[in-house]
Image 1: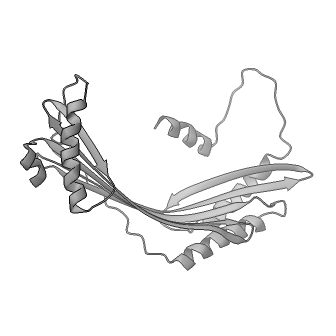
Image 2 (image 1 turned 135 degrees about the vertical axis):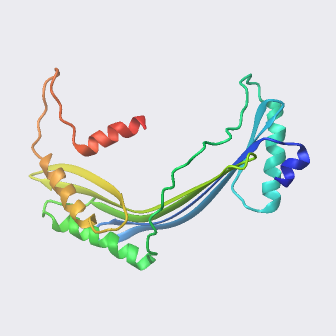
Length: 231
């Protein structure tokens, strides 16, 4: 706000996001990869002579943050759009959604869960073969928004995620299936792995049909994927 005032910027908003993730993946009976990442993003938007100026960065150093203000202010000079720029002042009321606080999980625990899912997948049927994979992770993210009218908003979310991808081979025919979930615990992970194997096996022996018009039933997972395309 000090830097904005110095430049004579009266209308602006600021977006800040932070994300952390920890994940492990398996192949055959071993951990194939492990990753940890942290990322932040800061965006500053302002109005100059009726036009928006915008600048973003990924560092929280004071000099970098002050620089975003001058960059956005300068960028507004090159905007050719005739659309009227307006900073939304905010709604009268916002619902509060409490984030579920998830227990911290160690690297060793995360790797063990990934291997347990892999073991459950292989144990589900002797048709399960190489190429089968599992993965688990923890994701946490936070978002903040401020503007020159005094609006301050914050939201955060965290979740465990797990994946099972089964490859099966029976009588020389191979099929595969997968599923993944976001949840607040890993209790359903091994059952999901067994279900994935069943789904893969159900494709064995499937035939083809001639072109035409047919009634079609979508599985819940496929319907969610279809709707996700539009969301």
